[in-house]
Length: 477
Image 1: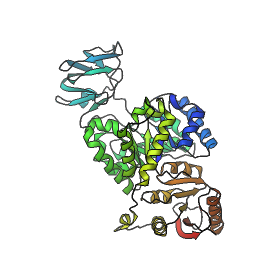
Image 2: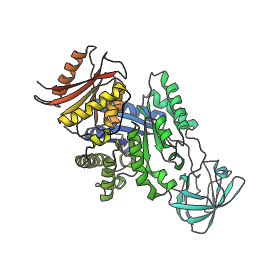
Image 3: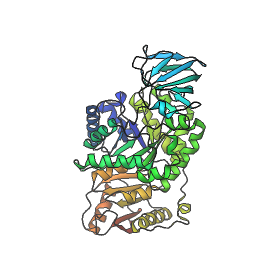
Image 4: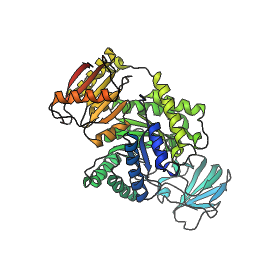
């Protein structure tokens, strides 16, 4: 049985919309499917979500769906010829009032607030930082700049300000409509683009809960950390979210490429310390959009994220539009497995000087500690909400955690947790019966055999959320 702990998030797109191919991708290791709301219509997302659910059922796996909101469009407008060549030292105007298509002297703006967000001396980075403009002056709606680093600029390319400081709100009117679509298709996770503070995430949660009420659905929220302003507010954003995405593209443009690797490590550590999930994203296997094998640097990058303790690694264009979506998933899965083999279990160090105020959290930690020292084959959590499994998964232990839940929504959400294998099991109301059922379930799946030791946690009375209060060490008869 495959015991990969790190989960894989794959983005759906034209290259991966064939059900047979998607089924192969799920069998090869996709745990979460990302629907990118920057592209396509509501009907496309609804159709793709239906396909994901069908494919997952055929493959006998539970796959989570993540709806990724577009966020504010901070972009230039369109050009008459689709693109222009900007020369270093030349003047170039970004004009919020311009209606006609752009040329090599000026272009309109999708983002009308830019003239109010910049001042002379500011540095603007376009197209992921490939083009650099220095602001000379702002006259009315026109931002006059000088090209510092030139090159080709095409329609609708993104704009970032070095060091951050663009005022665009994290949630646009389009996002609010998209949230309704995401709740109708019961997305397990909603990823919020460009949040700057905890308030952005609190607002997103309120909108999701209101839109989800008629579907009796509450998603988990992922904050995409891609603004320079989000870094000093990280603890607050984490507290208001269920997890974060280390979105290295926009973040690198705002804070500089060199700052990102250390920030990635800091964010992963902080998320784990605060019992939140974390996804590492952007250009992880970029070369596989066009090539059947990754570069050595990409292999290192994915392995390093695994060794940092990320819950999941993410594929974007590689699976949405690349030539080799299935091969990319297979390569990523094998890199994760190889890195995990050399991942040290640091359990005792995790517990020194820590106190647990809650009974259920103490039980979760007790199960980890005992199973680790006994060399148990498995750790089993009977869980209603998934919290016990989440707490266990925040610590590095090489023993797989099996989370048995009667709720399909909980099972899907747990698909993202590192080292957790969620299973659906209708646990009986009687504790002893439930424990017997759980062992039978593990035996049938070939997880435990005669003589194996495993640790199991549950709550009494059964089925009360947050009620885990029992740990039992069992040897299979």
